Image (cartoon, rainbow, N blue to C red; front, side):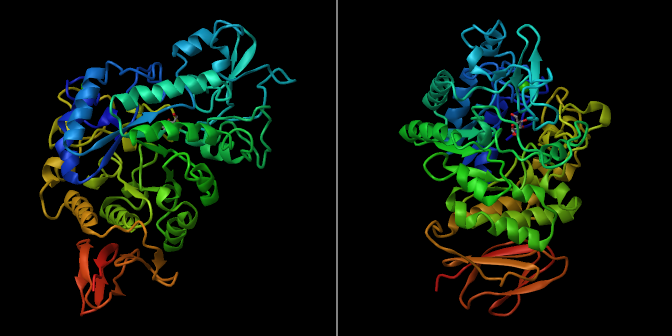
Length: 506
Ligand code: GLC
Ligand code: CA
């Protein structure tokens, strides 16, 4: 859930904690178990809250700590758990630690951050670049030293080799655990600890500081800035703390390679890690097969499957737009649903939302080819403001069509919302699959992707024409998207971009 855009309770145009509280029934009725809420801590909002100025408080624009307690209690009454977003890689430059660090090399908190003298040419200390493009270093003129930041200059990276930082975060975790959170989503989990010698990365392609941020990133082999094995010591330590509370640690584990993901979640640290490859492919059956099968043997039940997030264009937009993109996204979610791991929906995916349209002059995301389209307000109801706010939304976007709203879709048998809610209901009726091995039953070719886990089978037609699948005699269909027909005793006909789940208890 992207809190700024979920629900605004007080008309200031910004989603807030009470807004979430007031929609808990919607969430519970959808059939989910956990809600991950993006950062709501005090922040100058240079990166919309991912620049934290106080890890143990609530920004007044999102509410108060009392509102947070109200939200947690309301969630628990409905059997929902709230995960908060922990942002340990960097703080805001407005955090008192960084403010103090800026007072000079001898300040108490100088070593909470990563500082280095200029390189031999007087420029940055090494060749590291940021995820948002450009050098990962900014000069502090007062001291003549550079500080490091993987994201904006307003987001200085914390020094995880300093035990004092480690201890600060132990306290932060306990602060939220004592308030009843169900765990943490760990922002930028792969990058906490940096190379102790701050060595330059090997350059493997031409670097153009004006190029697209992904291109810039790919010009280097990131041996020394991200994915250092020492980060794992931090996760192991947090795991021990979370185990005391029966809480979960889910990582933003942005590794495109299954082995890299497996290294980040070996089992004794974070409980789960997001697998991002499905967010970076075209709709092509071989690619789909590869990203679905790729991490399973290595990561198994620790996988988190998601088609979208607040950082990439919405899945229906990426996969062709309109109803085509919506159908494909539902099919992908059906495929995710019985694989080892946990399926995750991004707010509004259950309404079939494509990216919201943000007029060029209203763009707010600081990052190039921005993330505003997937962050426009949740459309609750028809009309101006779409029921998100009674005021003016923080991010201006075109009003959504009536049929895109929750009001129009909830309880309507043919709506996207009903298809997603139906999928979640169906999953709740299936036998426990955790110990059932996964077997791909599609032979590895053709437009239908299919697998079996014990008594449960899943089949999805990824093509734009009809295909058939065989199911065992006696199997019953537990879930089907609208274009699935029973075609004889042991056969299902799947229209273009349709999927089904069956159970064979015989
Ligand atoms: C993660 C967040 C993203 C944020 C970045 C820096 O990737 O999901 O929204 O900009 O970290 O904190
Ligand atoms: Ca508000």
